[in-house]
Image (spheres, rainbow, N blue to C red):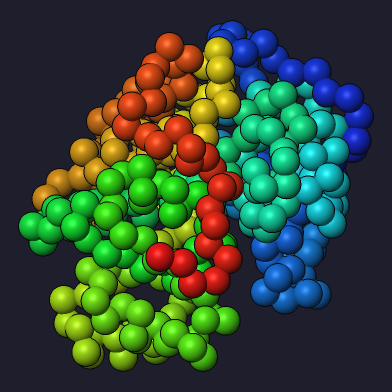
Length: 313
């Protein structure tokens, strides 16, 4: 079951013990800031139907009680206060449609952004799937990730994607935003690239780029369905981990698990394939094991540390 959309209070939190097998509820939370950037008139009224939709989907896939919660937040401090005020039976937070600036590590916020509960974002889950989709496509083309050049169109909207791609072994990653278009048109930036991940809906620009460069791989993430692909397994892994604070490691493990579970004729695994959830859950659990070494991930790279403010290479 899931409850109708609530508005978060701001009280001291009490949370279920980490690693316990006790039942827990999943809070699906948003402050609507990502929607408000697109249209300043959109906020609570627009995000609440989205929250209810996500809560229903997560309940359907996990069987957990889910609670859609709207947090009125103007900045990271407000969001942190809202997360701390969630009811004590909330074991995991899924944060959706929220401006990354409200939870970026650049703001000095710790994992959980003021809450003791593990927080999983729709942005990070979609980034893991996008990384997997790129890896499977490169493999199908016979291209080495280490020798491949990738452009992220709109990297600031998904800050964890660039660190994820680097952790996955991509040799050269360039971040591009629409404000770069005057000096560095996307058509020119992608000329020598093997792939572009389009987070901005640059249909016209990429159609032009593809006319010059027919072999260009264009990945356009479905930010809802792709995020949900591995989410149920990750929720279980973080809720039962003794230390759920892993950042890029968690999502890197998910990306590799998704890529490994994908058949040669697909970009991502079939969501109906029964082996996918257990494969991803095992990978996420290993990533959250405090004793696990992070030899495959640059320890200097953590979620939210993306420096993609404008064009970066």
